[in-house]
Length: 313
Image (cartoon, rainbow, N blue to C red):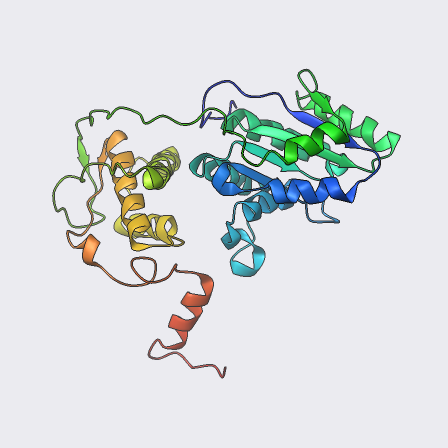
């Protein structure tokens, strides 16, 4: 199945850095070079792991998305982890991804990185530090099988050090705002929440446009999965669970509102009207106007629920 391209356009060729001397200065520069606010992240894969799910979680951690760590919730498997990584890379407008110790990549991880590059348009930089001839041969084979060898750009340690010290480099392919698109007529109505008028217009704040798009894509994907298994409209519990997952880690009240408005537009584009309470902007509670609703917050709330035994601290 052909993956959905989240960010179309030209993709810079991948780069392979063969640091035969295993220079610690190069590894330090690669880590200092990382700045998600400038569209750059560096991933140091978790040692002694070979499954692709671990690498996807390492990418999510480099993005600051720690909620996917096993200690913060259920263990996320490979496919959802890579889908989440692709979505957050697009939402956060990450343009360059550096993977350290790339000579230890498996064929599966190389394939997943190739798909991630195709889907997000990210520039992939692989650093092989102190790799043996056999490890480099194996890596080259994996990259060829993943379709990355044809346009691979080879950099030596000196050129790589120059690359990682260019902190002020201009970000490639800056995003441009898209013109407003007319809403399609809606023919069906969800009973998930009370109807209180049509969804408000999309926010124009540039720093929250990614949050709106996140909600929009999440709603469209959620509805597509639901319709693949059932022709019935989602019931209120399904919708409430979807919105809870969408906004569970919102850092601020404003982020939550924009995500919900994005979900409304995503539902509208799919021919379904999603209504939310009219007083949403004045609502309170974890994830709305105080703190993100994490597993720790849920635990503290559960300890105070009437009828449940309270545990000693």
